[in-house]
Image (cartoon, rainbow, N blue to C red; front, side, top):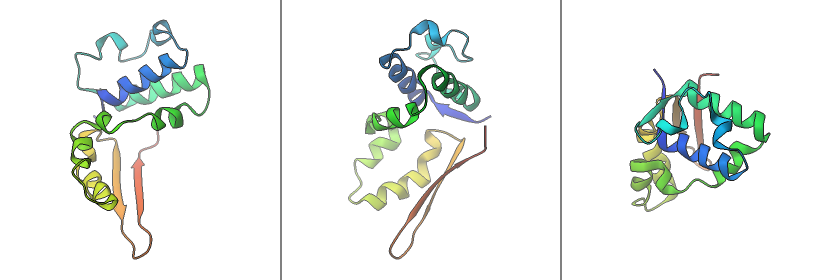
Length: 126
């Protein structure tokens, strides 16, 4: 089963609440928000279901806004490892190796070039 770290799920819910949704708006989601303190990860389809609900309630652009609010601490052990990097490319190298700590749904890949490098974050369509 594909999963997403609970820290990302929690961040999305908290941001949606800050943008005007209420706890009642989340009744009926597959992973109830009252249970998120007791679990480490959520099934990926629950994560995507949450995004779809928020998109219907708040409208487009939510994912970009919540992404802008992400802090290094939100990435757990992976984020902690970034703090010890001495150059930006090293962050991507570590992400490629350890992104699975956040999710086994996405496949993070770095393609290094002489002048330009590319970062790919791929997943199966939902």
